[in-house]
Structures are given as structure tokens and as C-alpha cells.
Length: 101
Image 1 (cartoon, rainbow, N blue to C red):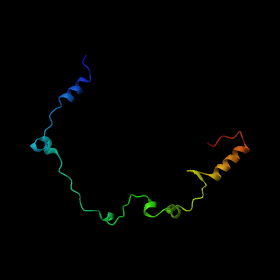
Image 2 (image 1 turned 90 degrees about the vertical axis):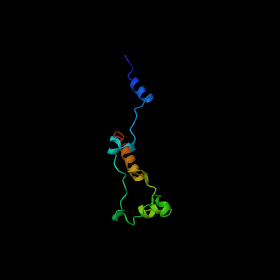
Image 3 (image 1 turned 135 degrees about the vertical axis):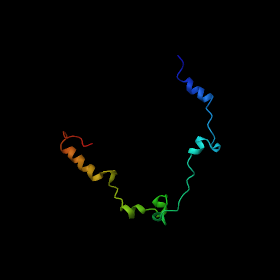
Image 4 (image 1 turned 120 degrees about the vertical axis):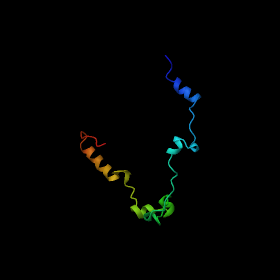
């Protein structure tokens, strides 16, 4: 039986001819005209777009004014040092309790 890959190999060696765009043939007639950009939207007029990080545009330490002073209490998102201490106390009080982690 012939290999299923023969057809694709034949296409690679002898690709079909594609009609050109300028001949006025079926492919050229079906192509859409070039899109031209319209006027800018009113709601976007005067928008300040800057992809630089806040510390570059507002200065180092901008996080303090946006989020408050860092306490160093956060161990990972959703877990603070005091939460971990409370969990460890519960674990020490009842060693048979289910592990919260």
C-alpha cells in the first residue's frame, strides 16, 4: 500500500500554482480593500499612556504611598507571621488535629 505521506511529499515538491492578485481573477475580486484608520475616539483624547513601572514614573518608594508602610509581617500571599504563629499554637495544643496545610 502507498505511504500516507506520499501526498504531502508530492505537494512539497510540486506545489500548486496560486493565482496572482493583480489578474482580476476570482481570488483578486474576493479580496477586501485595505483598511484605513479613522479619527481617534473622543474618550481616548488626552489619555496618558505609559508602560513604565511606577517607581520609574513616580519615584522609588511609591508603594508606601499607594499601599502603606510594609510591616514585614507577610510571609506569602494570604499568610502573615501572626497567622502562622496562631496555626502553630493550635498544632502544638492538639498534636492529633488535622494539619492546616
